[in-house]
Length: 565
Image: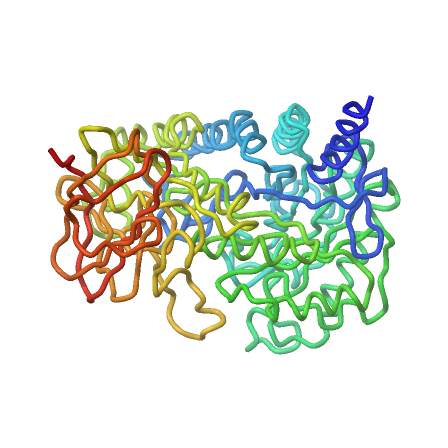
């Protein structure tokens, strides 16, 4: 009986922490809660790149917006085959396998960045001015995502990521055409956005697996001063406030159950004037975004003050695009204040996400052409490369999984301990350890590097590339790629170090050889400095080895263990 009571208590605690998605979520004071009044921490992932492509995710920063990317593809393969490409993209970028994996890793929610044009026609393409033509494709795909989420007990947050007309001067985020009236310039765009939210609310008003509605993603607009392009100095924000209150009121006419998530100006962070008339809904959450700044408590001072002033919960609705050390410290910072989060993104061509897309060589040749570094491909060649990209390369089964990124989001935020990146077994015949396979964990614990993350927003300097090779793993350690394709630790600086957890199959003595390009190192085994590298004794089981640079500017390839005969 005592054991049964214990299991029941632990089960109830688990329900509160992992956000079992059978309850409607709501708000109470500073917390998002379930129907048992238990606080819920949303730990989510944003599906960036699925319904809305951003150029950088495809290594096409020179194109930027999805509409420009699409136009360039049309020039190569024509309108119909371009349409086929985008259908294949939507079919394969995010599938049930991706959501299943998110559940295994520990996520309890997913944020869906919606492009309005999958749900309704643009204002200037409507057959009847002022009316709304509804497109089934977006709704059908949203229904499918919700079914995948249900199968995994995961909440879904609907996010209007690309609003009609485009909601900001950061064009790529909203796929905005700067030659046409923006979301803020033409009220017809706002009318369509409100109508879309009503349509979504009517469809999902009784769906508990929907956590809520994120009304508009990252507005960045200078309402009173056009020179303040992204609205970071805006003191009034009247148009934003009016849209948020109008959309909330329209949703509440059909749906009184779901949370309303709101975002301020300046990429979701400037709330000046937004609450000038007070809080307008009793089930609302303040969302903020966090990129490339420090992870110290003072960086949350502004949003914590908003929370206290208006007695509303906070949600870190979008963050990421940094190193694992930054990831772990940001999660720790948010959760220490009871704040949930949604990471960005699940996958892209680059390496600093849970999943990495590896493009085929034909796509790489396309990139070279588009970047002015290669010849124009024939239409058949371009079509083959693009369709392989959209049907094979982006699919979950063909993505590279990065366990170090997942570790940084779920384990490393809550402990100073480290875990092996790969198993390092040293048997009677010795063994070897690759330098790039140091332990997983935070800076100062798994390793120490002088540039562990990108803090350029806080520091006011240039962007820092924490791993110049931009491959293999996302920790703040400089890596390089050898001619044979192997990865090594590059350009170590005095004071930097790496930790390795070793498993010795038995007690034994080994001669160690450090494979490096020069420089001097000190080695520490189980906390003790090694005066020399001969006859080094490993104890059966787990051992820790730290390799510390004593001089600047050398590469470290690995450590070899040869048994003493």
